[in-house]
Amino acid sequence: MRTSTTSIRRARPADADPLADLFDETWREAYRGIIPGVALERMIAQRSSQWWLGATQRSRPLVVVEQASTIVGYAVYGPARGRILQAPGEIDELYIRPAYQGLGLGRRLFRAVSNDLADHGLTRVGVWALEGNERACAFYAGLGGIAIGQAVDRMAGTVLPKVGFRFS
Image (cartoon, rainbow, N blue to C red; front, top):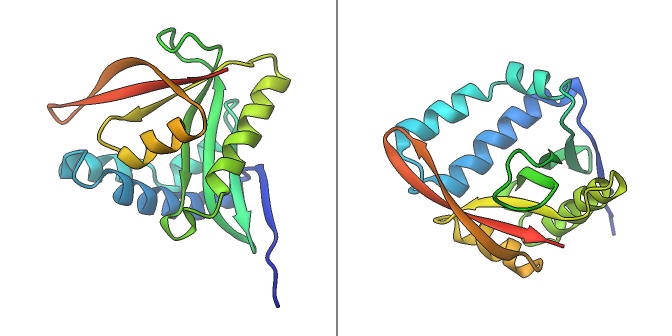
């Protein structure tokens, strides 16, 4: 029986191409039918390998989930970008490749990121999910997140309601 190693680590510049592919796959799966097609394609095109290369060098933490030398998920997080969630820490993005969802990797990544934020004194964490992304909303609620706020994003003339979850 073969076992594979799963690790969570900081993203490196060499991860830019796999991250661009992962972003493309996860966003198409999560947001097709929620974000208008043209806006979704534009967002995906903006997150090229070059964009991800820059992201690996920014101060906001970017971590990847690696299983058997393949990047299967990522998260971006840090100090809160706003006040609505009433939390000093925020997870900006957390995605797992569709073929790897349901294996506990998202929970593991969430815990790792939350622990890192807590290690930096940011013990209360917030996260946003588009209201139409029922899988993400159920995921965060299942982790104990309390829906505490609503806001909207606008893309290509479409209003996209989002729900804010807070974790203590």
